[in-house]
Image 1 (tube, rainbow, N blue to C red):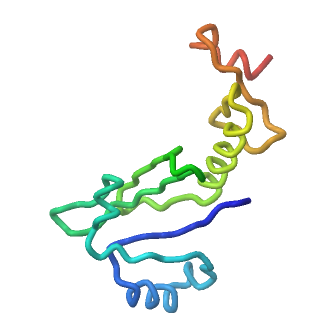
Image 2: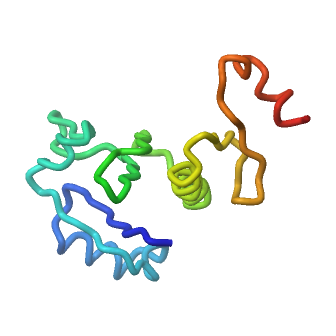
Length: 131
């Protein structure tokens, strides 16, 4: 789909390797895992916790021009859902091509209904989706 996935944490590359080797959920990981041991990138994205020296769980979609198009920060004990991340990724690709359309929360793919944002739409999203 034209995307590069990179996970980044304050863990070292050796910790990432140990996680991948021993954590079953990561055994099939084929994306890059980056080590931000100084927290520089975490600070840039606003997820670095100076108290613990760790980064919070953040998910960021950056378009090819370097523009941040989606940011989500989760508490450390809340897992992330790859299906929802992929929905948001596909939606961001879609609206980058169809700039006058919007993908509602339940939008799944190019076959799904989109909206044409306007002042008249405010408070009438459900009606627009049902019509």
